[in-house]
Image (cartoon, rainbow over all chains, first blue to last red; front, side, top):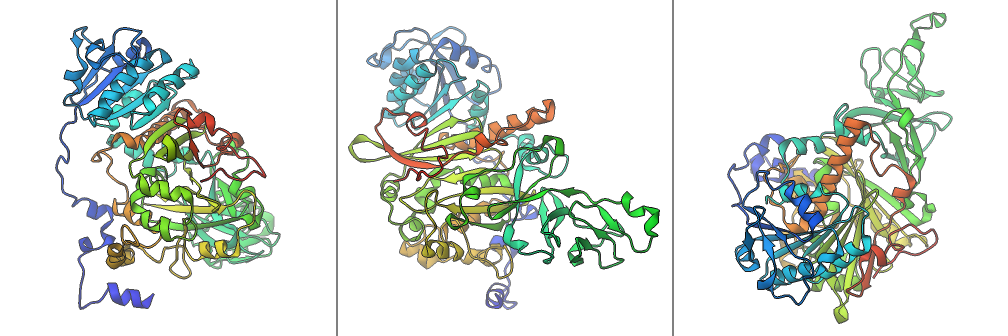
Length: 181
Length: 428
């Protein structure tokens, strides 16, 4: 190792600490440039069924960054439903359209607890896929209606870039916070 | 991103910190058994969870792990004499047994019983496989002894190494569950590393650099599935299990041995990266074992006489820009282990997670942090033992398989992801 020492600690060619990998210290971390390195993301969160909506409404009042929370308001939506016909509403009850909501979206998150929403899941996930919008599906298992959760996961699999099967609803704010929603 | 207080909660493991208390609920790897090769061999220093300890093997083959410093005047017992059933401080001859009991204070009358009032904090040290394991928590809450498959198969089927990694345990562990970096950082090694090359699965990795992820909670932790396109609309799945707090396995390739890691805090700025390879049904070949010793696969080369990698931050990890240009190494760093370590150490001793910009494909990491946080707070606030301590949680394997598109891996690969003694791993 003497050769390496000579190579990297040559007194005739001094190296600043910040000019080599040894700068990975707590002291050098203080010199990392401090600035906001990202702008606000546009996140759209869709609750696909009533139980998912209940979990979502529990957190909509939290301080989010330009996140929109939406609910699919009707059952019986099938995969062949046109995107424009998908019944959506905001937390205040006002109607919304899929087109207007995802037009400028950076990320779309789908929340589901049962298989009843597989048609709506596929309609939204497919629209995101076609528009190259990152789509993440979050199936809330909790040991309930496991075949139903499997159905909704299967419906999203072809279109979503990420699928998560979580046991508890407390993962919703954890994930949205991590994603800066 | 992670809030500052949560980052501190998960990364600080010294005594009497919540995460430190959680690590103290488990049997954790402390030393390689080869570090204490025979009775009365030299003692060795070991620092774990912010505690400086000394390990030794007494005249009867009993392993001891205790406070490094003599209770008399604070001398390091690394200078001690390991003889006649105990470790004797060379300064004034105080002697300790493998449980930390002071058994001799030569300056005091034997009849005074003075030495019975002296005891060094000590922890159990047991040998399972090639590893000496310790449990640094309360004896009353001691979990069953570890039964990880890599440590319980016959010796000729397994190989373990460890290396010093100069950063916090959490950012090292997060690298172990971040499958999406493989197609970039390790792409050169998939073609050249003798412990990786030649598997059909490598082609799927190379051809599809945008894997789709599926994260599924398990009782002991997570299964993180990475899906890439295969033939005829089928999916090539690679499943990484994570068992709390810090056990990860890499999905296998072909008939190569399976490998994985433990990430164990030394202190808040350093950790031990334990790396193992094993084959469930056959002995490692001479070539495979030699490749591991030579630092291929998940192992590494060393500064002689130490567990510090030969490539380290003092030599810029021996960066080879020419190899990078030739396409032999995506990052210019040799070896899979040091490709990971070099980048993880460059993040700083504890990465500032308030600054990071996670994306949806980081959900494995997000979920792991979430599970850790829940377990830490449940232990702190309610005394609830965390997951991952029991044998059933340790009976996991990684796996790789091609599946039709409508089959969820968690069901179709349930058996593949479970230890089945005498049954080969599921691999592509």
